[in-house]
Image 1 (cartoon, rainbow, N blue to C red):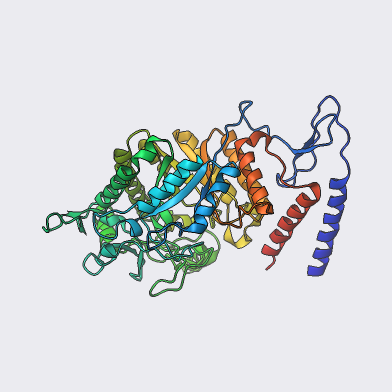
Image 2: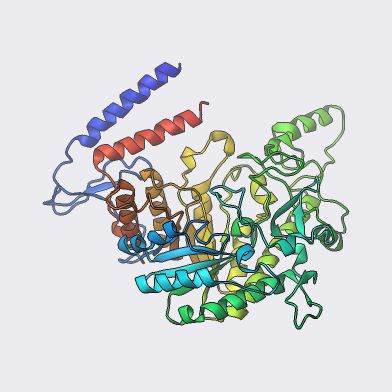
Amino acid sequence: PFHGMRAIFLYSSALLAVLLLTEAPECSQGRIVRLPSMSGLFSTRMVAGSNTLKRATSGLYRGEIAPPVPVFMMMPLDTVAENMTLSEEAMSCLPAVKEIGAEGIMVDVWWGLCEKSPGEYDFRPYLELLDRCAELGIKVQTVMSFHGCGGNIGDDVNIPIPDWVTDLESTVPELFYRDRRLDPSREYVSLSCDHLSVFPGKRVNRGTAPNRTALEMYTHFMAAFKEATQAHIDNGTLVEIQVGCGPCGELRYPSYPLAPRESHPAWQWPGIGEFQCYDDGMQRAMRDVLRRATPPEGVGGYNDGPDDTEFWAAKKGGVTGAVSALQGCLGGARTHETWDSPDGAAFLGWYSSALVQHGRDILLGAREVFGPSMRLATKVSGIHWLRGHPSRAAEATAGYCGDYLQNICEMLAETNSVLDFTCFEMRDALQSWFADSRPQELVQSAAAASTRCGIEFAGENALYCWEDEGSIETIEEQAEIAVAGGADMVGLTALRLDPELVEEGSTLRKSLKRFVANMKDLKNRKGSRSRVERLAIWTKRVWNAYKSRNY
């Protein structure tokens, strides 16, 4: 059967090639002629009197002009080394940012590098970077990276949070998020410490250092950074502060650790993840608010599927369906808690609202520090796997429960902040069938929520994708849909800048430069390849989709 399907596939592709490579009839009176779109890849138009093939305008826009979307290049994680020197390789890429037409760069300002002693800050390499960007005329977005680096996708360096923070673990049981085995996540301080005065401040005249809360630590860090960079704020080089609110700098719980925990191997896609509310502070808050002693039972493990569990399973099928059927035969009834039962829903509501409040508190502090004119942003993770399942368990364990996009956007409206959303490059059709993945729908839902709440919207690709023209075009399509739907899209961060990507004369650089130009003129964006090359892209997509559903 496999060889038969392969033969049909190849024959169909060949037939399609003949159709695509046959010249379209000449247009009369400027009428647009459309060829088969094939998932939006090959929508084309032939203009009367011209043999030039162009990508069709979508017809989605409310006005004649689509607002341009500036592109910022994400700098390497090790742009600033542990010895507080700038990477020569990273710095050598800066002129290319200007040459390809990008607006500027985004760079992590690592807490673990810049505050090695409580209350003592060193931003010298970042000031040097800002100086260089000012000379080149490129803008800078900085990330207040209050998380550690290492163990996540794309992490090739290790920058933990400050030692003087992690040293408190034995005396502050609320310090880190913990899973149900009580394994800690040392990447980010638990929100339980937001109002807990346990962190040392700067010693004054050899006296006892006053303790600070986690929120005060973050605010002090941002205030010191603003003071150090004020000249570059004034001259327009530093244009945005993205405030990290969790692991990977994202507003979420560390529910899917890519590095092994002490009692469990690493999470594997597309597992449901686990709740991260077992530290003393989260347990205390849960008891105070919900009057319950423990989180729900039967929630499964990091790498389980939702239908392998009692709590997350759909009403029919899986473990829940089998158990319900057996109980019905025996005259019994389901008594276990589920995600949509009253108690289960109340727990998820508390778990999610605590996360949103954490983001609100940090961003309010940032707004007080940077004032009303600085653009603030926070990043929300595009957890697209299992979104097609009724429980949306992978989102929920990360704190994304209910209509969370609306809730987060309403919070961001309160603080006048930008929603920065990930996974722009991913397509629904190319995800494995068993993952119930919906990345395109998720990005569009995020854009719609930002529009309803009247806040600015920005995007990122989640994974390095610049060798795949299909992924590049998907980013453009998602941005086009967002802008056409009314989203105020103020930027797209391209992950991640490296010498190979911007090498003079390379195919990658040409693709990136074309992408930057297309984002500035989404309504009339240029086709990326010839018809033959486009056919090859489409064929590869179909073949990959076929394989993902049969292996």
